[in-house]
Image 1 (cartoon, one colour):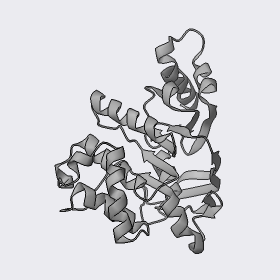
Image 2: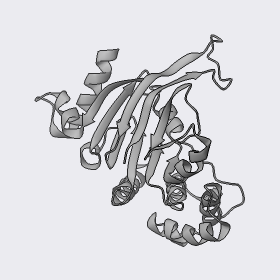
Image 3: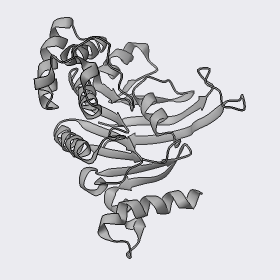
Image 4: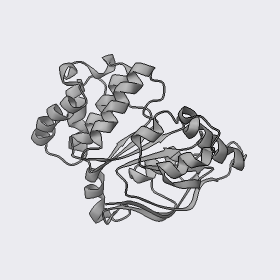
Length: 256
């Protein structure tokens, strides 16, 4: 099973979002990728195009050119789009729950939006919350959750419709160390039966969590390979705990 990006391009301005100079700005330019590993991390500085790439993968945005597919289901084909969205879960960087709904109601609502019946979505919301360790908060209003709990509720929303691949955009941004550990443990648990793609600019625990590293900068792929190959870019003199940071810095500084 692979997530395929075939020569995808995207420009700001495509949906009326213009730069300060009043012109369209290319974000991705004929980018091609095949993501088939169980755990992939997408690294890059702010503005590299990571969020745009995941938004296209989720079908929230449509590429200017090119195509995206998962297991042969393509986002530009209306007959396949509903099945694609059911298979692909997405947690954007900013989770916005439905006002007034409880945690469980929010998760069930996401399942309904993905095409589940109301009964099925409600029934599956309970085990989804159990898996992210939020079952005890199922009846709490979602606006009462902490930032870390809100992210976990968002992941439950990707699990309720039985996603085959989950896209996580900057999932640990703004979380304290204890919340980040809870989140890392959760992602590790998901890898037992779900493909995961995580976008971030943080390199902590990279060697322990991911099989594949993709470094994106200015809409272009700067590195695409296994974790060991990425870490080797740091050089022999970099301490073990700093190798991921060293490799990342080495790649990005070459572009500066």
